[in-house]
Every structure is written in structure tokens, then in C-alpha cells.
Image: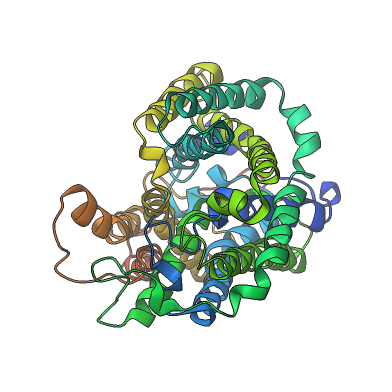
Length: 462
């Protein structure tokens, strides 16, 4: 037991008798994530910010690809972490020590989860500020937009650390806002969606082709966008699962909280764009609020969508502070969050937070192999938690490194280096998951797993 760090020995499992129903916890929280306007507003473009995107081969294929992506999120990215959380009652930082070792666990997945929350905060602040500035005729990167984005991030830090109890009281009701607005948009566009003509969408360069097939390109783009957005939330299923009573609750929490809202919001966004083709073409759905609903009602909806996003911004800072505190308890949360929020504000000011597709790619590359390796570790251990492993577990870290390279290679080569990829990687976040999953099994079978350490008796690995 002496080889175990404090963050493992001090962990106390959430007892079964203290756990509550899946509908008001797991499902409600995930629904709030997937109904965030930043996700669904760019489903039709695949986060690329250009015409074409996921609608380039027509509405039916886009809807089919969306449904596939939603189920992949549930079964590949959420289910194993959720079941691990349910069976152990422990947080992600501790459960992850089986895959990455107790020394490696200081950094991944817990600390990485915390650091990426500041990336999410920057995206939240950027787009919320944009919606708040739009009614005043101020567009992207205007002084008002950047000022509002900065104040948004600072307010989220303060409320996340000092007033989260007040935010939590209203957070369960805020998903009603995007649902109502999407329904309102659907009512006004559903009748004309059948007239959508994909051939009229202007294509950019080679469009979304994969291996010469535009249909495969659409499926790959849609899955990459949805999975990239969801990847961190999938790993966070450990925490949600620790509040579930059994495996059925974990399954239902994902199906109702992940699959259903993703399919609803995504299909609604696709139909809205299809139904307004003659008016606006393929643009972010929130950019059509004034066109479809009229300026006054559209401006009100923009304001409401921004307000509905504020609780998630607060939760970002809280999760980041908790993750950093778990790994490095001596660091003051105000200091760690202050540095992280400053970085988030910088991403807003320089416009990097507005590149949602690129942000999702980085997140998918980071957490795709984590979810893959955790799933492989769970299966190899007989569908239970193996327990913490010594030091840095080579099987976990090597599988993550290769998976991260695979998941991020296309973005680095094409966007940052300005070069053409010598070969195509289908759906990078999914490819990263597959690489992490397969390589963990290969390395584990090759004897590259570090030894399992003894645990306090109060922690049950089954």
C-alpha cells in the first residue's frame, strides 16, 4: 500500500445506497451537453465553416451518418467508462490508474481532462459572446464580441468556484431553452426541407471526399465532428457512472442522455438548413434565427441560447479545479484556474476558440485513444476494474501516444503545416480510438502492463 499515492489511498467509493436515478443525473447532464448550441449549430457544416459539409450528398445520408455517430459515442466512448464508474464508485483520476499507472495518473486522464476544460471554456465564451453581440450589429472578432467573451470566461470562473450551488439549481432546466428554440425553427422550416437540393450547395476544393467517395467523406466528417465533440464527455462517464446503481442504469443514461439528444438536435439542425436553402444556404444554424423567426424574436433566442450555455461554462472551471486539485492538492484552485482562464481568454481574443471543428479534432485525438485503451483494459480484466498499476503503465501510454498522433496528424499537416496528407485517415477521432484499443491489447499481451498494486480494503475492484 505504501506505493500508492494519496489521491488513490484517500479515494472513497460512492456507496450504492447513496446513488440516485439515472434520468435526473446521467441522462439529464449528458442531454445538457449535447443540446449545447455550439454543438448543433455546425452539424450541417461538420465544423468546417464552409458550404458543402455533411449535407453535400443529401439529407438522408447526413441523418444516417448522424445516427451512426450518436451510437458510436454511446457504445465506444461512454459505455466502458460508465460501467467502470458504476462498478467502482470511484472518480476518473483513480479509475484511470489501471490504464496509465499511479504515477502516470497524476497527468492522465484526470489532469488532461482538467486542462482541456479551459479549451471548452474558451469555446463557450467565444460563441456565447458572439450571440450576445449579434443583436447589436457586432460580428465575430468585434470589440464588443471579444469584451463579452472575456467577461463571460471571468464570470464562469467566479461562479464555478464560489457560486456553483446556485448555478446547479438552474442547470437542470436550461436544456429546455435549446429544445424549445429548435422546435420553433423546425415548425418554420420543416415544410420546405423536402425541396432541398444538394447539387446546389457550392463545394470547396475536393469537398468532403474520402478515398474518392463523397458519401464516405460525409460519414467520416459527421462522425469526426460528433465524436470529437463528445470524446471528453465519454471519459467523464466514469464520474456519472459512479452515481448509477447498476449496468441497466448506465445503459439507459447513455441512450437517453447521449443518443436521443444528439439525434434530435442534429436532425433538427440539418432540417433547418435544408428548409432554408433558398434563403441562406449552409451556415451555422444560429445565424438563421433572424431569417427564420424575424429579427426581434431571433435576437431574443440568441440571448436565451447564450444564457443557457452559462452553467456549462461554470462547470468547466469547477471540473478543471477538481481535476488539478486531485493530482496536485497543494495548488490553490484560484491560482490554477486563474492561469487556465487567462489561457482561455487568449484563445478567444486570437480567434482560435472560434475554430470549433479544429478544437473538436484536438479533443478527439486526445481522448479517443484514452477511451479506447480504457475499454481494452476493462475487457482484458474480465469486465471489471483491474486496480491501480505501478508507475507509468507502458501499455497505456504507448497506445495513447500512437493514437494521439493518428488522431491529430491530418489537422497538423493540413492546417498548421499547410501540406497535403500523403494518405487519408478516416474519421480521425474514431481512428484514434481504434488505435488506442488495439495497441493496448497488443502491448498488454506482450507483457508491457505494469504490476497491479494492493488497494485499501474499502475499495472494491469488482
